[in-house]
Image (tube, rainbow, N blue to C red):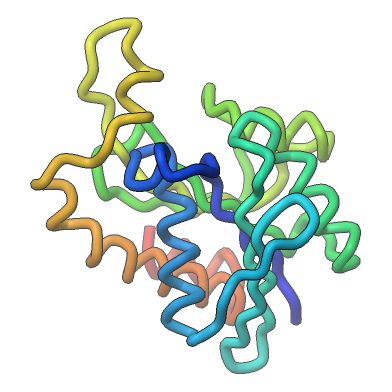
Length: 185
């Protein structure tokens, strides 16, 4: 079975380490742990990872966050995959820092990357792994907050939460979303 695993983020060194790029960070670790590597291809950096009988096409769109849907649609079509075999890894302001939630579908919740994917695919019925980044910012400062780097305290906790995210991604591909949600959520 083959899956498209998409980590959302923004390209460029100025965005590395920001809260909004945690999707990139998680898929980087997933690919590194498999001794695989990303290659620049159309609409993003792509790596191929095998876990037992599952093949993961791992994508980091180079379209910037707000236009991620174009890359997702292209790679679903290129790999001849249904939306049911898509998992988007994304930051989430509505979850406390480090909380992880896997969902089979849902609203974009104000997240511009998810909004664009929903618009381009014409559906919100795709799985997403949401990584909580918290919402400790003054009113009207959301953009600044998501584009800030993690605090030192948060950085200490990130490796364990990324490891858990990677286990959830693997379980999604090997056991399916229902079993994975029951096990991890």
